[in-house]
Amino acid sequence: MKLHEKIFRLRKQSGMSQEEVAEKLNISRQALSRWENGSAQPMATNIVELSKLFGVTSDYLLNDEYQSDNDIPVVAETKKINYILRANLIKIAIISQASILNIVIQPISEDMPQNIVVWFRIVELVLLTATSIWMACNHRYETDLKQRAKNTKIELVYCIVQLIVASLAYYTHLYFLGTILLITVCIVYLLKINPKYMNRKLTK
Image (cartoon, rainbow, N blue to C red; front, side, top):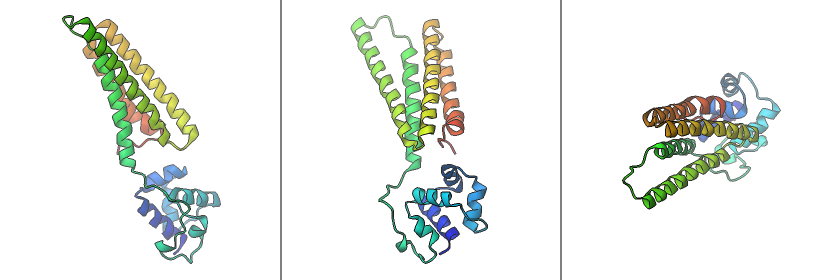
């Protein structure tokens, strides 16, 4: 089996698109397409990255004598990654935090007993803290340490912006406007910032 056939077959077996593989290898989709149709050959450094990505040895990729999947010498037992589940968990964490923040800014009835109000605020604080920690924990999915550090800074800025919006809405009593702004910032963060700057494919 030729190298280009192996690259194509391994990509299909992994369930990844050309765009996803190209992004992980930091190359263009066109370059990967040329590798798969045999019109171009990957460099040695690309071979190493391909072997890491697909969990096979460089020898397997370069040796045409291996003709079937049974011949693949596995480097290590690799756990199949569910990218859809991972993306959904990230989205749920972000949306949950924005939702709890929206609940926090809403007024509480003055007729409610003070001790109930205190417990209500404590529960809100606990939930807000939990969802924020959940968002932070999702950064572990990014294996590139430089990108992970960048993502952490971006998400910190996002949280600060959301906190400023919530605080302004709470102290000016513009609750409906605050809700709209919180939703707007969350949507922009999910649909624009995450895929463009944070290497997260959270949308099609």
